[in-house]
Length: 622
Image 1: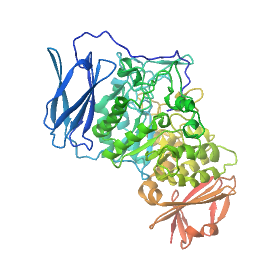
Image 2: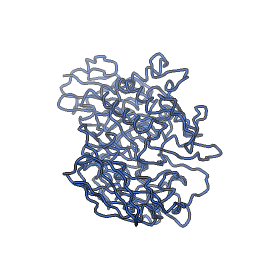
Image 3: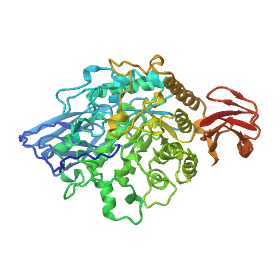
């Protein structure tokens, strides 16, 4: 998620005490259910309702024990520590609360775990497609807007309002994604965002992006709710697609129900006066940094309408960790992308990551840490550097390689590939660089095709690197059909609707007939590379060997015991004949090659013709 610079009145939250009647009535129990047979038998139930914290609680159910009931500053909350033994059976237990002559009973479901694999993971064998549900496809116009929500608007003519895209629409496009060679779908957040419109520069904007949660246990009904999400994931899995969910631990929306009536003042980070994060990464790893600079980066609020959660509060931490586990178990997602990773409390993140990995050993977690150098990027993943804090995060978004490709190698006039080489040359700092998620743009950045000046040759070079080098490639929706634009004057410009995804669209670019010749060429180019990568383990599990770029020529190899693939890039404006003697270390014994993109056979490997501004992908033959 990007930083915002809204001009808003400061929102200083304090514990709110609504004038509830003395009669206790439970309004919420979170998690909303749990399962028997989980690896960790401990669950902490958040109980909420008027004076819920003044009750004495008991649970009588075979194999379930209430160990301790906690009260907090706000009497409307109680937190119950519960142990579910291995002998417990699925069923419905009763949470009984008593105060004087009053007795209250709340049912709570213990479910049997399904046999299907949960948290199956995403690996370098996958190709992730990032889409914004509101802007991708609308499959049910009846859930576009609701009059009883804080933002009741839906208007496609307004770039800042919701447009009506939903999970039903995305489900209808699963075959499109599968044909493209995609193996995993990542949506920007789908949890309820019952947020009010906010004012930025005089324009009222909705929370269609999804980064201001207001209820962790409900998928936004404008996307179709929990049932639609369950249905989508089942359909995706049936088609062989994995699902990545976007997590936000750092903050929630100002309209979140537990922000309106906080358990205590320390539920969020409090400051004497409103304090925004500096958005600076450096104080976190800087050995010379001041404590106040570190604190401001991590504990400062992202923006005034996104309260910053206090992860050192154990009840906050438990709530977030349990929700993450509940989500994987309930919906069956395969991986987590973590928003604003570097702004979180790092010990908390390690605890959350570990809880997920203990329960789901194959799950991938990759966070967003928008940094500018390899050392800072390594800090937030498993690394080989002697940092005072050691992260256990398996993967991360590779912002450094993104910048090397788009802002340096392709954007600059000389198109020198050395920044790409140099970035990969520093992979020694990571425990496993193949778990880094690579990308060329996303919902917070200028679109790739615009950044490179709408140069189709550069477009193909960047995508070739993305889909043939190490890591887990990720592509932003519409890149395959050359969608463009810059985020100035607004982010809405890089979040336009996918043409053909909405009723009444004049063009349908989900179909071949709806695309221009150049758009079809782009689509087929992505498809060719993506399917080759998917079907050939050498491209995702093979080793990588790269050679120093020389005079605009960059060559690297993917190889294993079965295949060797050569990727040769000429970033110059003139065609050259590449003398391959320098690459004998990887080419000895090979007599010919097949051009993966054209299926052309090359019979002489001594001199390989490299057209201007071209990347060749050659499968070498004995």
